[in-house]
Image (cartoon, rainbow, N blue to C red; front, side):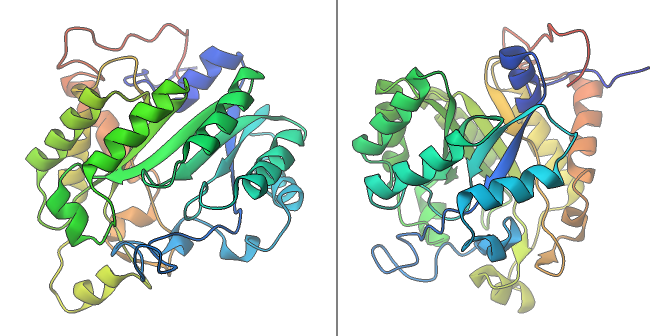
Length: 314
């Protein structure tokens, strides 16, 4: 049986090395809000955001134990164990006692080996970082996922992000103080940005220090502020070819030890408005893989390219 060559340090590959078995994420909804929606920082959220594009809103009222059971049934036979992924909105935005209750519920479930916690750089108080560090010290696999999207302060302001790059630098420094692994989310194709902007953002993020990256194309989703601009023909979307080329260059410029949790993304219709190619979850990764296979994989633009040590692709 033939296997696709491992051309970048994927999260699946990393987990296989760590655990010796297949681990998958189970997305959960902790019924969190966001300071950029509830009026603390602003209202309406980021201009690209509609959380329904990547999470089932019907799950938000269900207990964590019930959500885990349902999600595990969906992924049955696809993994040997799971990471509980608190994905929607800002999953460190709440009272620490309540956060610990939710995290404890997830970690107490069968076959859960750790947490991935998605949040904003300006919503990670030291108390929460210390709590996550305690879970890690107990042997849990813990990842703090920070939504940065871009290191360009002008773009951050334009998309109503509500924080600047300095807030991200501070959050990473404090997370590192607690020994936590950080995965940074980046969007390619934001308004006013081109390939050079994406590569500059990558350079800044790598200089700060990061353990993982998530790349995804800007896509326009129903219910977002950007949807209005797109309908008025005031906002263009990125093509598959442009996205794949930029993402491949970013991967090639990334040191081998950095783990790519994701290299593309998709949204479910009818939430997705544009671009059409984002409906297919495989088009982006396949286009990127083709470029990497032809031109060189992760780290090929650095002094130490990625070399897979496992016998087959994960």
